[in-house]
Image (cartoon, rainbow, N blue to C red):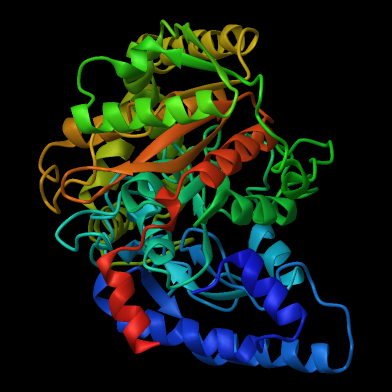
Amino acid sequence: MLTVFETAEGVRRGRVPAEDVMHDCLKRISAAAEIRAFLHVDAERSLAAARRIDEARSRGEALGPLCGVPIAVKDNLCTSFAPTTCGSAMLAGFSSLYDAEVVRRLERAGAIVVGKTNLDEFAMGSSTENSAFGPTRNPWDPKRVPGGSSGGSAAAVAARLVPAALGSDTGGSIRQPAALCGVTGLKPGYGRVSRFGLVAFGSSLDQVGPIATDARDAALLMNILAGPDARDSTTAPDAPPDYAAAIDAPIDGLSVGLPHEYFGEGLSAEVRAAVHGAIDVLRTLGARTKDITLPHTEYAAACYYLVAPAEASSNLARFDGLRYGRRAGGADLIEVYKASRGQGLGAEVKRRIMIGTHALSSGYYDAYYDKASRVRTLIRGDFERAFSEVDVIAGPVTPTTAFCLGEKASDPLAMYLSDVYTIPANLAGICGISVPCGFDARGLPIGLQLMGPVFGEARLLQTAHQFQLATDYHRGVPPAFLATEAAA
C-alpha cells in the first residue's frame, strides 16, 4: 500500500490508475476482515469515484491534492452516502442527511472515502471493545486491543488497508490507538478543524484529526482539514499555515520540555526506555531538552471523568428513541424512553451518562462539575507556563503497550488510566501527536507523544517528520499486513 503522498502523485502523473489503487485497497480490506476495522465499506461507490478521477485525468483536467487516495472515516462522522452508527445499537442503520465538513473537504480534494471504521460506542472507550458490532483487533497481535476510541481507524492504517483515516480525539482517542498500532496520529488544537457533522461526545474536548503512516501524510491531510468553517462557531477564524511546506525545516535549537509527572510510577520500563531513546534522537538532531513540571497533572484524570461525562449526558439526551435512533415499545412515554435507551445504549455509555447527570444535578454541581472546571483552568495554566519556556513537550502516549482483549473490560478505572498521559491535552485545548518510537519485547509498538501550544500543529509535524527521517519505526508492518499483501 502506497502512502498518501505516493498515491496522489502516482495518480496525478498517470503512473497508476485510481481504479487500480481502489481495487488493491478493497482486496486488502476483504483479506483482513477478521481485524474488524470497518463497519461499512462501499466498494461500488468507491470504484465509481476512482473511475471519474481517471477519466478527468485523461481529459487533462486538474486533479485535487488528494486525488485517488482511499481514506477511511471513523463512524461518528456523518456521511450521507453510508450509515453513521457511532458503534451503537441505538443508531444501527441510521443514515445522515448531510456529510461532515471534514468529509466534504476530503472529497473535494479528490480523496475517496472507502468506508466507515469501528469505534467504542459514541467514542467512549480506550480499546474499541465497547462497539455494539464487536471489537476491533490489533493488527500486530489479534489477541490484543488496538486502543480506542478510534481503534478501527488506527488498525486500518496499521494493517495498510488504507493510506490514512480520520479519527476523533476527546481524551486521547487518536493518539492512544495510534501508539498501540504503530502509526502516526495527530490531535489538532481545539478549534483548528471543523466539528460540523461530528456526533458530539464532549463538545469542549472533541477534535477531529488524521491518522497516517507518517507525519508527511498527516501534514498533507491537515492542509485539507484545517481552517475556519461558518457552520462551526468554535473554529478559529485565521487561515492555517501550509503544514506540508513546514515539515522539512531542521529542528536544530528546538527546545523540548520533559515533564517529570509523565515519567513516574505506572509507566512500564519498556515504554520508558523507548521514549527516552526517542528523546536522545531529538537531541542528536539538535534539539535541547529541559526538565519541566506540570504540577496539576495528577488531577487530570479525575477532572476529565467529570467534565467529559457531564457533556456526554447533555449531548446524548437527544438519543431517546423518539427524535433519533432505536425506538422500543412501552405503555407510556417514560417506558418508551427507558426501554429505548436501555436496549440501545451499552454499559459504558450508560455509566458515563449517569456519572455526568449526577455531576450536573442540583446540589452536586458545585462539588463536582464546577470544581472540575476550576481544575481544568489550572491544568491549562500549567501548559501555558511550560510553553513560555519550551517549544514542545515530549513524553509517553500510554503507560504500556497494547493489552489483551477483555483484560480491562471489567475494571473501568484501569481502562480510564490508559489515557492518563493524553487527556491533559484535551482539557487544555492544545495539540498533540503520537509517533512510533520503538517496540517492546513482544514486538508491540510504542508511541512518543509530542505536545504543542493550541495551534502549534506545524511545529509538531515538523518535529515528527525530522524524527521519522532519522528512524524507521514508522515503517514497521504488522503480521496482518503480510496476509493482505499476499491477497493483493
